[in-house]
Length: 546
Image 1 (spheres, rainbow, N blue to C red):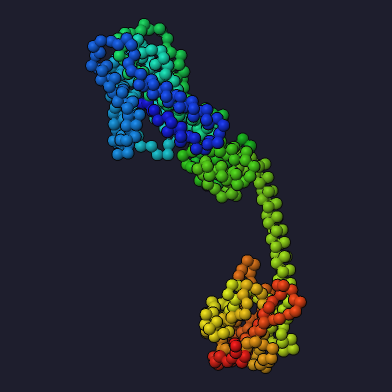
Image 2 (spheres, helix red, strand yellow):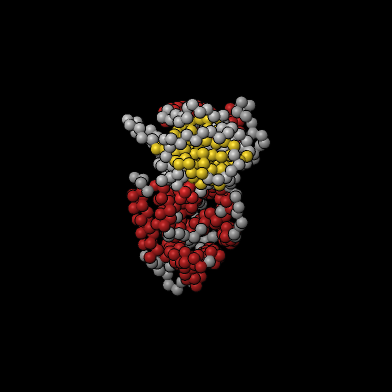
């Protein structure tokens, strides 16, 4: 329960989320003023008149209090950098010695009163292992320290050395210490803790140090006992009544404590209206939607806040800020018990969004199909009178660098484009061939024809004609099909060139197209690939590259 002069650094931690708030400037100015007043109270020195020949116990008590204030001014921060354990034990030991000596020095209180207050102080200083205990349990464990402080203030009222202002500041410091724990138990506590109220209570922590400093200053006065008034301080009574509230907290309705998950959770149709909050908690606990250490009342408050948000993405972000996580449909299923109208609207919005996405996809698909049909319309069979067993013509999109592969459709292409470029046209390896083109980043026309035997050469009108051997291990042989957003491939269906596993001869024709008056994006190049059975792997350049 020692003091704390780190008000400005504490305020800085609270400022972040409200850096653009209108009230922030005046509040920080007020905190600066409070801090300056606190430092003046610490440094102004002993109160007058001073008693002569102070008892050793009083002298040592004043030294202990001033040592604690030095620690609060920054010494404990330096010790903590060296060792948290040393800082904890030094701070606790100094405070325990201060309380014991202070209760010994106070006049006009019985021995049993001193013993009870010292025992409460020592119990408060015992370190306890805390896991995921609820906030109310942790506040209950801190109650002995608050009770000890109340008893010290009662004792100071019986001793004339301390002024009413000092006792009043001590009472206000106790109220400030009680404020934050109480806020944590209120619904929507985050809005209070991380707003002006939380900042106010954190700033008032400085009153503890002011009370300690004034207590040490006024100890220099002559000791005397005030006559008993017959009734306790009204503020002391209020503090005594407030202590149970630290544990219980303010409630809007009955607390459900920590609801265990029930398997299975009830359905919405089978849940009575008065049981829907319990059903929401069941789903929240079963799916680990919220941290396990959050009490039900806070989980319900988070759920109510999410119900007030218009968009599903906003509710998901609110859940994340609360320390939870859930799939969108799980969150909607849980919130359905708290705000079914909101969830129904969300589902309707999702249906409309899906319908709009489907419509946009259909529009894009129709546009793409129309574009492919337009590109394919530029291409026609260069051998219309030579019918093959399987044949087809389509536009083929070329990527950067140009070129394309003919390969076994189940195996990966294995032709080497660098070798094909060096050769001037084609490189065939095993079950694939890499073929170069005149252009790149543009469409060309491609015709595939599969024959049962070698067709005539028909070399006239072609710039390159090269024949190679190629194999098909799986009985499939073809070219890549273009996909929307892809790099290259045929814009229409083209046939399988292989009639089954085996070896084939592949003759590739190529020529540039010089069309007068053609459209700007019409193909400038045409290829014809002829495949027929044959075991030879010899490369024959019928019309070589020149």
